[in-house]
Image (cartoon, rainbow, N blue to C red; front, side, top):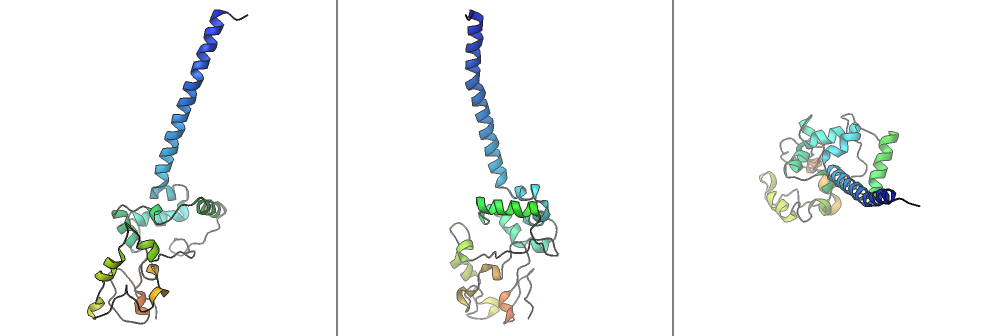
Length: 193
């Protein structure tokens, strides 16, 4: 038979279980929220994967070789984070994690990742809240003082996209100068002919 003191002890334990469960749940929710916030920061990308992500995070903050940071820094200054352009799907993250753990990724001489069919087109860059395509076209009318010339209204149409010229993590290239001899913006290069 149970004594009065044993019954009180059991009742106290029963009351503590929901409290302990609630505290554990709150801690897990806070930890999950904190991880989610950190995951959305550029520093997350190179916290574990220093090689090769330091190159990109340094460029985003304008550190290291400034030539690779031009557009990354401009995005950082506008408050645009990496994940606003690089969608972090579960499949992509599993593939990236597997490649990093196995060392199955290639880097260029400058330490950056070898591009893997990554392009930036009008659909990605000229979406609501990002670049307004009409403003971009208007800003480059009569390029290099030549009436009717506009690199953003190319005679090649959809054959070229934003990343043919603009490189967020590298030096931008005046793609038009593959054939033309137009003025090259400061910090850009011309393609080899």
